[in-house]
Length: 130
Length: 204
Image 1 (tube, rainbow over the protein chains, first blue to last red):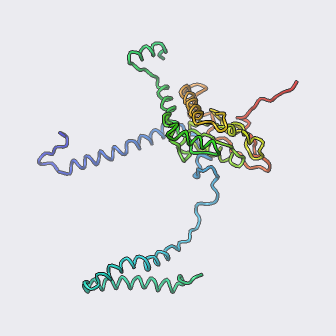
Image 2: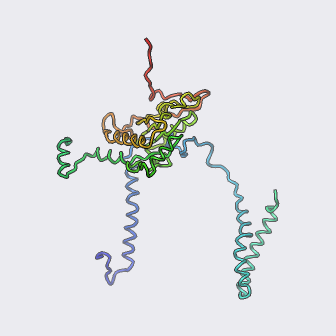
Image 3: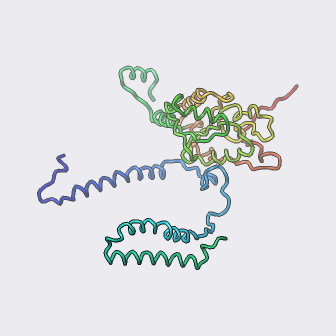
């Protein structure tokens, strides 16, 4: 414990800084050692199959840069409107009589915002069954 | 180089001497990581060998890796169909050096009871350099353990220099073997001629 005892005029965070530095060195040393070993000593035998990304035995087919449809945001909005809103409405209803005017107005703004999302999704035709 | 007599005499006095090669091979032999790769019923015996009853962990070979990047032993456990053969070779190619192959069971050695099947490869040694072959249909877990011990002995006795040095230290040994393609009637090529040279029978 002799190392970690504090002198009276010493910054109390000095020990913490030293320990943090030691922790970083402790974590980086094996990584650097592994990198150095791979760089300077390990015999490399690269090849077409070995450098391939896919590793289940099958040849990878097609391009990884395919187009994804990003329509999930609509589900996200509908989920907020119908599900998350319920969670907030329940405590709102329970403590309705004891609420201040400010809290009431804040809650109404929140509801109006979500209602706007519903109207928006409705007008976009997302609620129509196809 | 220290001679064996002096070495054992020192060992009796509690002094252990070793060479760097022995130490290196000792480490290599006791950390053989097989690939999680089963093709047929032999794989069930392979699983049993890694479980508590047979406890492959005693030999340092229980760490079955789900990726060829981390494995250095391929246990070809089961029937290799011609449809599967390119995948087996490709997986072998993706394993890092040094790598070893155990052909487990009659099917992996020669096609076994399904040898007459139109879609059965008659032995994985047509495409891959097999180090240890285990007979049996299927071999018991003890047989697999014996094969791993045999492989360990082979690794321990490998010289790090000279013509018999391990694959990763020999730049001349190719890292990848040609992957066969699906042909019209058979795999193309049907065998790797550099690897598979069975003796031809001549009648007089």
